[in-house]
Image (cartoon, rainbow, N blue to C red; front, side):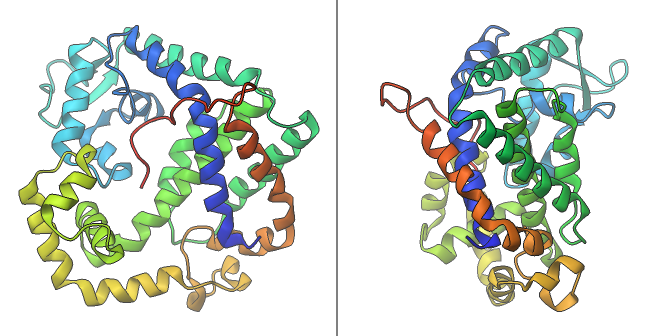
Length: 320
């Protein structure tokens, strides 16, 4: 396995794992008045950004492909449910782009969701304990290498994700979930680093990606493929026009992004920026690539229950 395969395998393992606790979190969220599946992206973010407040602008950094009004509506929902309150006294109105903190009720809700997820994972044993401990150790080395890698990409998403680290004493599967989430955050950092220098929006970049791959050809098809982003048909008309006008430059970016960097890239070689994600892990991953057979076995064991039936659904909205 090459280091370019690490994220693909880690993502599959993360999705398989979250399917085991996603339904339990949904049920816990409903106890706090949050409709099915609608807690994702704002409630936990309000906790992870502390001591800073949460805002639609701050959410937009990580959720760069989502419409700002959709993010503002999520925060307004939190205020209506009594889980969020404006930063300061009357400093913001729901949906007006203000800043918010968790209320006491909101803190209880977040902790309830965390405890629910950890409880659902605590007794999972998809592999023998020695293999799980070894996998956790290897994933932690990847996270450490990501934190130490030269920039770009930056580390904003990764460092924010680390705020939820459960500690070395947490059950091994809980730690594996954290490290897989950390790698997902670093992948988001890499995506942001890939298109931001070109002065485009996340929405336009995503639209261009679907057009490039032949997955959509019209604004209506883009809207049908991405209904959860919160954009309208007119937004995709504009995005399609911007895609056409910048296509040549983006094609060059795509070639650079897909280029296989040499191991020297991990030492910051300017000519080897290659795939921004995992570029800094190349030297380590190529030396230990055979060790990730455990990750593949981990994912396979999680895909079905003991009776052979598939497990629940992964957490959150679709992943880019």
